[in-house]
Image (cartoon, rainbow, N blue to C red):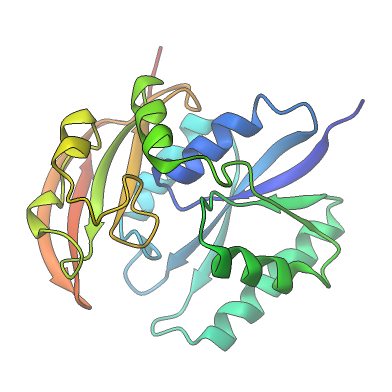
Length: 228
């Protein structure tokens, strides 16, 4: 049976990376592109805040084309939804079946996505949905995912976690109020290696800054993707 060609909403973090990992083993779907929003003003991936250059390296490591959606800054929700509607139109025109998301358990986010895609003709797909996040976090680490915390909400957790590697030691130190996968926005990550990549992306820690009430830990690319 021919697989259904889909896009994956790609934040560059561990959840979207794990979604790619799961989808590549899925008998029904074939991921043919990574859909990412990029802040034009800063040249960084929206929300997570890492450099666009690192995003490009992720695309090469995943062996997939990037569907970049350039966002103005500031960007209203109306502008954002208009740009995403254009992406959906392009996807339909290119014969794609749907768009997958790495959402874990937030019902309001899932409902929003389903409602916005209802009239597009595209199927919303949630390969990671309702996997217990404690189990999921440890599965990611055991599978070889390497990620850094690039954005931390200091209202929900200590800013000292910004820049840390997402590993078992970090999970053990997280407060009980923080979801192990940061699904409530406690933190966001950048993935530099894992089973969904052909090789690793070497990064070095950069400046840690506070911007718009969040703590961002910059990462600098050292080399291009190293293939194994």
